[in-house]
Image (tube, rainbow, N blue to C red; front, top):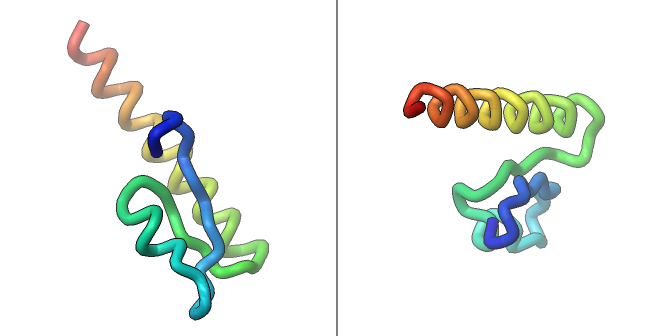
Length: 57
């Protein structure tokens, strides 16, 4: 988000996280498997960004 950190938030019916985060982060159910999946998506996303930056050199 604004501080250049990827945000992973809990998806919950009483949470406004999806509105606040929008496409600047990842939502996960508060389970080990879903948080693990969100962390993997984060590293995949960051890896693709690094490849894109490296390709511009």
